[in-house]
Image 1: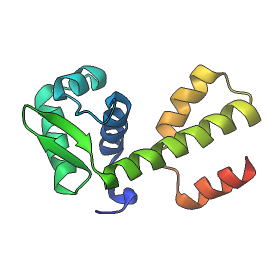
Image 2 (image 1 turned 90 degrees about the vertical axis):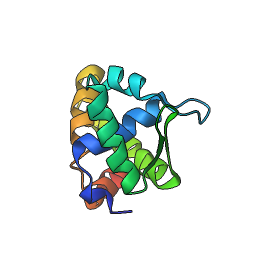
Image 3 (image 1 turned 60 degrees about the vertical axis):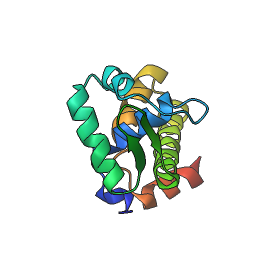
Image 4 (image 1 turned 135 degrees about the horizontal axis):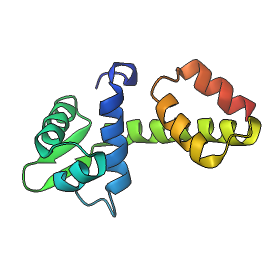
Length: 123
């Protein structure tokens, strides 16, 4: 797998959405991803196929998609970044939760490992 730094924001968001929709390790339907992301089904399928080529998802047409072990690791890193950013924004800066969630979601994709570590240590 390529490093997380090589993933686009849209690829990271797709992984995050797959992780959020997955329940009991069942496969996520592309139609559910299309609805959640407000993307056309063909666009979702194309993105999932690209994520499959780099080993982050296992996609089977008509049977849905699930994260591989590597894909789950990426989802966990994204979630950790979101959580520390959201905590920093709400607890330290006093930003309202709704705004903090929106800002943290945008920032999680550009956060460097060094800044992530520094924020974690600070909190």
